[in-house]
Length: 188
Image (cartoon, rainbow, N blue to C red):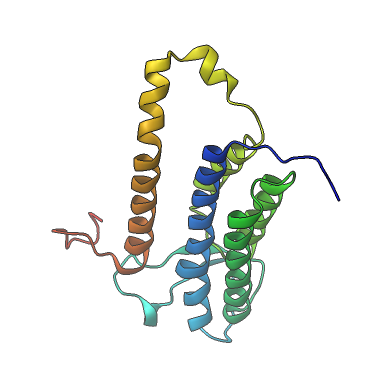
């Protein structure tokens, strides 16, 4: 039995895990399920619309993606499996020695099998942040005064909740295009 304790920064772990879980959910929900709905049909290229014409809820609700798999059903099943794996991995293993690396590889795999392309601007910083889980936060102590650190600590959870709500809103917008008091699809 390994007696070595795993030490990690819980705040960094929770933040990285929540963001990674949201990324996995976006691949699973916004891409995988809608690609499966398109059925056993060819993709007609590597750049696809995850949401087919018959399943769109609004004009711009297409969810662009890239896939190396030339079949919507297979692409959707693969994205769904990878998305669920990202969720499980992020919730349980993000803090492990190779947690961030496996997360990065899963996100690359998701991108290659139809999990979307817009998430790249989020998963790369999330991966970089996750590499800091097992690192001390001594920089904060040396750089920021105690009063500022306390303020940031008190804002951490509300900001994570707000970020999660914003991300889920973006997921909803991608599919349904619904936003309070806004009906113009081009504005959305």
